[in-house]
Amino acid sequence: MITAPAVVSAPVRVVLVEHAGELGPELGAGPRPYLTEAVRGLGVEERLGSTVERYEDGVVRLADGETIPAATVVWSAGMAAGPLTKLVPGKRDRMGRLAVDEFLRVVGVPGVYAAGDTAAAAEAGEGHLVMQSCQHAVPLDKFAGHNVAAGLLDVEEVPLAAAPYVTCLDLGPAGAVLTAGWDRRVVQLTGPRPRR
Image 1 (tube, rainbow, N blue to C red):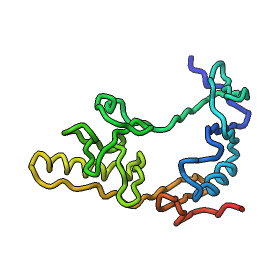
Image 2 (cartoon, rainbow, N blue to C red; image 1 turned 45 degrees about the vertical axis):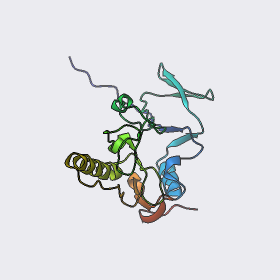
Image 3 (cartoon, rainbow, N blue to C red; image 1 turned 90 degrees about the horizontal axis):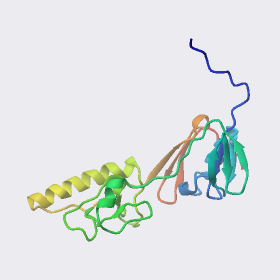
Image 4 (cartoon, one colour; image 1 turned 30 degrees about the vertical axis):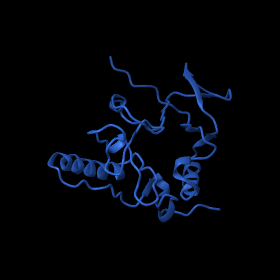
């Protein structure tokens, strides 16, 4: 006999717990008003400046002692380099990515290159470390592949030339925000502008 699950009549409650004191700390100040309005417009509750201590028996307990009943928990803990990078000696950034030079050679490890989410590569010009994103991973892979082949063929390596940094943030029914530069200046917006 197959039985259907019980229909839940209570409204869905979504609570966002963020360690930082603001939404999207890594996104910068430019898109934050749009992100904040979109999240609040969807009725999402915010618990800023807090962390999840544990989840057990259908209850999330925050570090400050607050408890939140929860039937479903989605946990996102940021990004990190893949475990294979631990096999390579060398300096790493806080995400475990290997420090590389402008040719994507792992600093202090001859004959080893790193690319994609494993490379802490500096963007030309301002010197910011590239983000773990496909925007940077694809060119990193291309330059690393070229430079590995160049080393084998004894031809000149090419230094990384990362594309200008952009962020595209999907805000669901509230639209989307496109930012440019490391200061994340809003250059395009779809949907309504936030109330100020």
